[in-house]
Image (cartoon, rainbow, N blue to C red; front, side, top):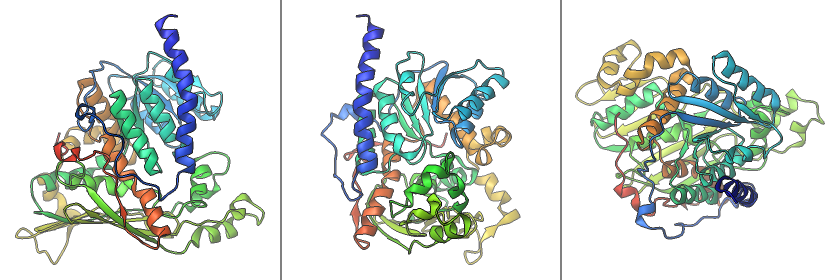
Length: 460
């Protein structure tokens, strides 16, 4: 049997096993189930600063090109050194839309895989794909990313990386075993203010770090009107079966990078979580849909507002909040407090001892001189183009550009698999804590102690 045929048949057999295992872990995992460490692995297996061979032209495939994935396709087409080779989505209309975006940009039409939920497996049999961007519903993230790495390709996964403790471990172990990248695409880490704060923290502007606040407060009740297709068609169901912080990483990722969590300086230790009553979605459904509508037949259990508190190994604290139900303006908090000052978002403002009046925020037009001082060089280099090409103010373009840059240079990525797991595992730990009346939950150490050997994220 020739090598390529043997490999294809192996992948077919593997896919059936790993999809089943992954879906069991994602859909049936107990929120409170945890393990302190995975199986023992050799020191050489650690993937904290994983480098892969350089790739001259990064050949991409996309799993899921709906609300989120379509934007990734459009921006990837504007980045040098990228080829869009294949698209998988069981909703043929969005797959065709993504293909049209490629041809309108003067690029070759990618191959489409639209024959049902599992047709993406045929892409994994191909030898002309270097990396896959996964923008599918949450329950697919673990099985699709694990299979992607087992097929010898890098996996870039939308947030969250996984929704169970076991799912996080599965992806950590797959990345270590296969030596393939598994990066959660936390785009907010590339926001202008978030990068500016990171740079300010790195140069010691606010002293020793003490406390951070992170949130995802975003009224998304309107997504309940997505029934057949769209993000709300599957995300609404999460509110009917889980009670905790379902979406922690947009606010948490940046502040974790400020604190160098899992990168030499600190790690998450314990979490406590509490939720309010679940009232808002039921009332929105009652006034927005007929009484016999599927949205009124559901019973929503996720508290409208979840508040979690993380204690780190060094004794720092991080407040993390989640609310996509209440009528309230958008915020991610994005606050980092140090012994010499504070940086905060929404609106962007700061106070630094000895340089400003710490009893009054510096904000608005007065921030201009501070942006000049602390602007991150990545935003200085890419910001103008990023604003033109879009994606949440340009952060999406910078994220994709950095992913491609690192792959082409054979350098470590800006976010490793352990960070994606640590930020994402807040969800199941919050569920377990809420179910236990706010009892503390211990964080798994996905690095197995190797976080101490990992350098903080560099200012590139």
